[in-house]
Image (cartoon, rainbow, N blue to C red; front, side, top):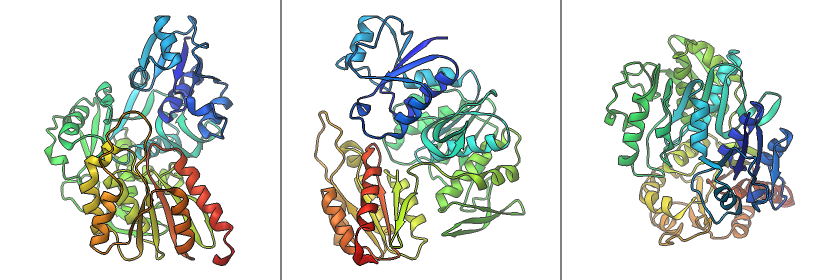
Amino acid sequence: MATFFFCGIGGIGMSAIALYLKKAGHTVLGSDRSFDNNKPNAVKSSLCNNHIQLVPQTGEYVTKDIDFFIVSSAVEPTIPDVKKALELNIKIMKRAEILAEIFHKHTGIAIAGTSGKTTVTAMVGHILSVMKKNPTMINGGISLNTYNGENESNLIYGDSNLCVIEADESDGSIALYTPHIGILTNISLDHKPIEETLPLFESFLNRCHIGSVINMDCKYTSDLNLTQKNIISFSVENHPQATLNPQHICFATNGISFNLNGKNHTLPFIGKHNLENALAATAACMLLNISPEDCLSALKSFKGTKRRLQTVGITHNITIIDDYGHNTEKIKASLQALQLHQGRIFAVYQPHGFAPMRMMKTELTEMLKQQLDDRTYWIMPDIYYAGGTVTKDVSSNDVVEPLKKVGKNAFYIPERTDIQKFLLTHVQSGDFIVIMGARDDTLTHFAHQILNSIKEKKCLE
């Protein structure tokens, strides 16, 4: 058994690996600047409940007794803990490197793609759990089901040889994984240009030992040069070559119904994207000789993942939703799902960085011109700024102004306090408010703030 120190243990991906190693019998401790303010934090509570020691990020707890020092990505010597690890010549590993070591000790199932990775990872883990396969799942998001006696966790700790992970292309770490089964959910513009991600996804699928899963509705799938012969494909748009090709699909406000291979199925989630996610997870488990009927039956008890169209609360018949949508395809999928409802939609989207916004501005604007209808209100605050040196040559207003010119209900409201006032002035019974964005953990807190402020507004009764 070894001793691991995690610098930045509060990260959603870092915490899952830390929990895994602790349950595997290793000694685990770590630090995170976000924990030093003593505010309530679900990840922090989970780590503490599993007896992982959390220490201040001062460097004094990094000692020669530590075998491995884990960092999320870049090694920043300005951080006291990193500086001390370098001085003591402790072996430093990146998050993706330690995850790859764990993954390759198992029969590995890796989920890649621009959108849907976290939910599909959670779905595969859930199917395998329901089927008593006792998998390990290390995810980049929190499942709302209960596993290992723990509510809302990013880890399933199993005792079989199966391991399910989310493989990220944004930092190139997808190249570290050689899966037995690989899933490619879709390809769209996000962290990197399409031409940079295509070779990463192509190589990923061709490395799979058992087989791979692809989305036939993705327009870039045909651009992949796949030498992998054992492929299960899926489509919700009736692609003639798809292995899984559901018919008679009905998207409703309380779920999805469809016919697959002559059998009727219903799933308790909303939106076309969630049917795609369910088919991707089903296809992967079919490569483990689990029938599609068993997979879809297992998914009836899947509760979803945190911040993926998650209802925060309902008050005065107004529904407040927290959502991770942050690129064009994810935002479109969330809007399409919400537009199934009859009420008006107030979508508040905070861009997650200046570089991503600069890259996706045009694509996002054109999508919104098509997707925003008369009952959908689009609201954007300032772009999220995490600190450091960055070129601030793009603004949320660069998206809002073109939308206003074509008559869309679009608003640039820089500050959250003013957004809250706007919502209190405009929302009414039957409306939906969705808070969208990535990277910024305070967005969930903002959604709760809005919920509480509407609760207190008597004139809505």
